[in-house]
Image (cartoon, rainbow, N blue to C red; front, side, top):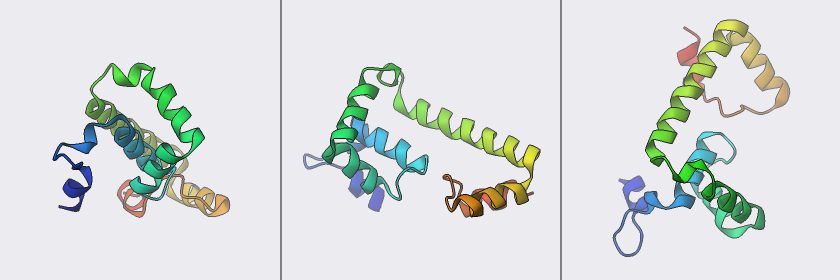
Length: 116
């Protein structure tokens, strides 16, 4: 419900189709920003964010449907995490997270899911 309200813009359209909205979702999922709103604020109100949007708009991202890109990234990320946990083990992954003081976008649910 809240997501639907957030994605609707003033004229009743779907704001999730906007280029900045797609990039904000990707930045948030990558762990670069604590929330989608923080990512949007960066993209829309900073010089570096505007430059990032411009660079991404002129690349392949606009040529493919964005949902396919997001789903591909999610599947790729899950596979990378799975192989990381398989090769290094969950203890080593957790040790790096603690030493770095940064979760690197890995959430508790992912730690638990890949620990099996």
